[in-house]
Length: 219
Image (cartoon, rainbow, N blue to C red):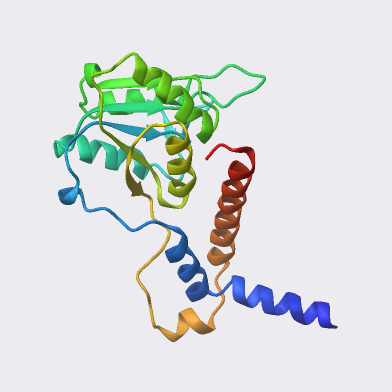
């Protein structure tokens, strides 16, 4: 009986929109207004947001987190970054695939970003390798001194840790926020929402990744 009651309490807590939103507000860094950002040499755009649909091969399909791409374009258009470095390989272990950095580059080109202003890192398979291989790429471009790191807000703490560990100073520019403005509507307190369960799963997964990276010395 105690186990059932405990399970019910946990279910009610995790499905409560208010408590879920408060957890996200604690984890995700604050938004950075574009106007407040100083001009940097380049933005490092982390991948993990696109894929090639086998039955729709003539275009790039996007997943959650595609705001990373749109907001990087906004930074470039606003003159806040002079170049864009897209970091990300295919992520496939046993099969060949187009590196995601190339997929995103095609989106940037279609958006009118000149090819000369786009660099790609095509080998990384995770956040740690994003930082390590980006550092190698930067050694070939010593003119790039200042960087903005663009990734989803809930992923930013782990990404910042990896880039700092690799010795790459970056300015955080989080996107794709999950937290919402506080809502004091009774519905958020009283009515469970299945989306809160999904958000908790994503948050706990990212927090576990953060701890594993610390244990491995990746950050």
